[in-house]
Each structure stands twice: as C-alpha cells, then as structure tokens.
Image (cartoon, rainbow, N blue to C red; front, side):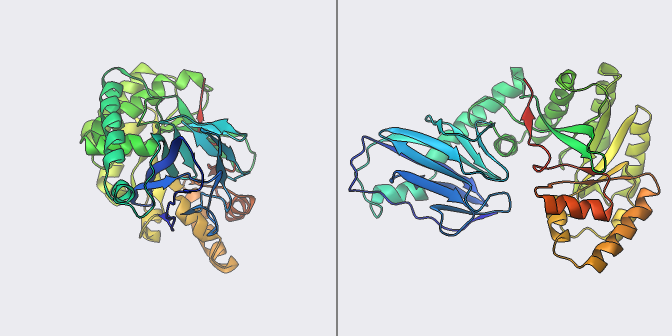
Length: 376
C-alpha cells in the first residue's frame, strides 16, 4: 500500500482553540501528519479524498472525520472492510480522544490533540513537524515501554478471525491475531514493529502462541486454532519444543502451526518438523503461499496439511483468464487428492468468493466472511 498524496493545510480563516492531527505510517511513509483544519476530512482510496490511501483494503470513500467546535468525531462511510477505533469496529459517529488509534483497512493513524498553532503550512514549525520524527518517537517510546510491560506481566487481547468451509459455510477454525489494549501497541503492525525494534521478535512470537491457547477456552473447543511463526525463530529448537509444551497443557485443543514462506523450500526441515508435530497431534500449514516468486513445483512438493494462499495471489486470480483458472484448479485438485487442504486468505468480495468456489478451495478466510474479533 502507498500513500498517494495529501499536503496538510491550516485554515487560517477559522479560529480554533485546539488542533487535531492524524499521525501515522502507511505504505512505508512514516510520520505522515495531517492537520484536520476543515470541518470535515474524508479518507478513502479515491484521488479526490482529503487523505488518499492507495490500498485494496481501503474503500473509495472509506470514512470521514469531522469537528464539532473543539471536539473531533469519526464515522465510517459504509466501507467494505470497516473502520476501527483502538481495535474495535465502529460505524456511527464516535468521539475521538488524544492518543486514540484509528485503522482504515491496513493503514493506522494516531489521533493527536495539540494547542493552537498559528503557523501557516509553509512555516518552519509546520515543515519541521512533517520532517522530524518527534511525534513518532514519542509514540515509539510509549510503545516500547508498554511492550516491555506486556511481555513481562501482560496479556494480549483474545483476538481471533474465523476460518470457514467454503462449500457449507460452517465454521472450521480460528486464527489467532496479535492485538493488545496497551497504548502504542494496539495493532498487530505496532506490536511487530516494536518487537523488531527491541530485537524481541522471537520472544514476542513465542508469547503470541502461548496467548493464543491461553485464551482458546473462549472459543468452541471442537475447532482448531491456527498460530503463526516468525522468520527469525528456529522451527526445531524454539517452535517445536513450545508446541510440545502447549500440547501437554491443552491436550484436547485442536492446533495448527503456520510456518512462514521463508521455510517453504527447506524440504528436509519441513519433513522432520511435520513428523514431530504429527506425534503430538499438531497439524502443519504453509502460510502466505503464492506471495513473491513461489513456483508451482514448491506447491506440488509441499509437505503440509494446509496451504494458505496469500491475499495478493487470490487478488491475482481475478485478473487471469478462465482457461488459466482451470489449469490452476487442476493442480489444486491433484494436491488435494493427497490430503492437503487449500485455504484462500483475504477474501473481501462476493466475486472473490465465487472465484475461489469455482477453482475448488476448501477453506476461506477474510473480511467478507468475518473481521478479527476480540472475544469478551
């Protein structure tokens, strides 16, 4: 995703005692600051939006922010994938507070309330705000401190996204997704960014799996919970021993371990891992399949119980011909005949669901079916 363009401007004709800003990172553009100077600020993918976000997860007109005197409100504009405030989806107008986290699709922004700044858009103070990382560093500092607290004594929010059987619509399982209630690290992106900066990627990944099953009693006990791995952790030395401990702690819980795409081609390692996991009744899934330069040979040679196809690959299926889809469907059917279950991720529209049905996917996951949900 990329942030197309938006130059913030200050309406000097309107006297306001406070200023509201959106500060965040989107598409690799860090510390992007937008001052909300007019009564209404529209957010969406269309180029005529006040904040234009180039992402398939963002609707053409996704949401709007508006001021009532010194108060700021947000309202979803009937978007496909929803708008979220501090991890909770909202549709109707909701009042915002300083420090709140807003998510539109895969873009996240911090709401910042500041005292009056009489400087114009070309002033040194305004340009310094955009060019320096003062606000981002402040948020990072909060995030780093809260990550340390989280890992030492905290708990992740019990956030899961459902996975469904495509042909029957029945619930098949859940994937655990990282979310927290700690300021600065509410979203998965913030959590993983902060753990990477703190060089605690492995520790956080281990923590996520532990939390996934610690909360699993909140879900149906007869469905498996999918958990993830991180590219920097050893599958045999770190992940496998933890899964063995988790199986001992939760003997009746269905478990599926998703391994990152970097390990897909390490066939000897995967065979050994799958054998060890099968001995403790844990199934194996290849995650993000089809992302990057994945070859058909890797799919055919895959030694996994599940193959989860990356959302970008599923989107590409909409662009190919029917003949090409038929060819891909025949390959899928051949692999399915060996017992591998095919999962389509990132399904967001009825059209995508129909294509996946025609091709022959077994399971589906995505905003069209369900959003990530924090279970109360």
